Length: 317
Length: 279
View 1 (cartoon, rainbow over the protein chains, first blue to last red):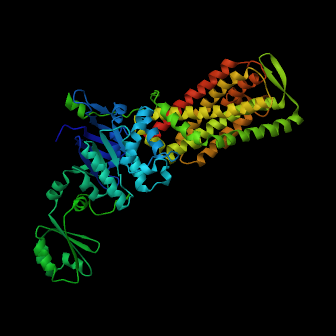
View 2: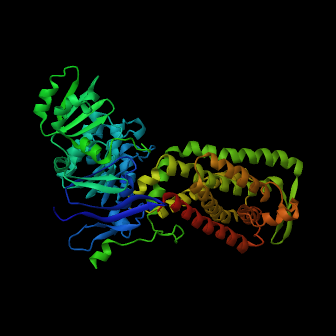
């Protein structure tokens, strides 16, 4: 990996008796996208808030290497200097409802100490990037959810940041809007910008992220490249079986040969999941049970996520 | 050395540390100004119409019954027409109301409902800068309102005292004091309902105890003693003589009390807001 742009070590935070982040470490190199995934309450947003200096960590260091020749900047001590080089899209829109798209960008640029002329020179390009050029004079209230998220992203780029912190940037968007958002984010990565992203969408994480950090109950439970994580933790194939009598496959002695072909079997609701390296013979056996419905697919990030964090619904979800 | 750096244990910074202030408040103030400029005219009508209706109705209506009111000045008691008495008190009340409204309802909208503050905090701006900007903004709006009302009072010929020029900065000071106090309650609020308590339990009684509508000499001893220390009383005691082309009897005392209220309230508001934002 290249020299890191952001390096987080041993980060911890507790509120009263509740340890929300425990000893979390990660690093992001220039041009790299790190995805932080985990169930609700895993500590994703608190981690981002600490990276922004909005929440003071109890322990750990957050260092930002803005310039190879100079000493690293440290959160929260150098919060203002670091934030001058960051772009942030938070989970909830904080666009100004009284301003047009263009005015939102202008007003936000001023918070970075930019001159009006310098901001105005960027507004056209930013609206273009957000595919909102035709809506420059429109207020956020008149925009669709996807447009508002893209305007938030454009606003986060007003200071030409080197690192973007995106907290669930596509939650609540329809597939078209999500795909457009992904395309825009990939464009940024190609330009050499770094992204720290939290998400609940495993396809999003797989598509955008070079590396992943899986958080649960505040701790890091896995870390690595998406494909490598899947290969390391899971069998290559998954066969899902459902329909009347599917559950018998997991229990009845008669189906023992079928079970012998799977490395791991999981039951969730009315569906049986076979994690296997022998999908072909397994499918052949299942062909003799035509009343059951089967789905054969490669193991994916969602399987990994569910294996690591469990299938039960979280209390706060 | 590097090892030590990487596992620093941080002591949580106190919410009551001293304010860290810089010119970073200016773009935040400018943001509010830009929104307001779009709605200025309609809001101006609302801001000055109500106090003026009160003034005209009570000043001329009640004034005809009351006649003249005796007011103590630096050079002994003077008799003044009730409309002048009321105008000089009610302009202080307007400064208080305008600043309080902006620092409660509008600031709360920006802080809690629209998440404007959260957006700003992602940029290199401190919470301290935002609270300062909101305080000065509410004071500015109050100054704008009382300037418009003063203009109408001059046009109505209620007072032509050249000392009114000095009433202007005093009223700005009152605006700063009341916006700082209001921001304390903004930091504590869970919703808009909370502000109704502030207005009915705090501001409305103060209006009656600070000599806006009738001389404080009418108040029973203990209440009068309390009224001596109310922030609105200080503003009224400073502004009323200026309306009458006189000098206040104890200018320094009133200015110091106002300044003490303002600085204490701002520090308290900032500390409580920091706690609210856990920063």
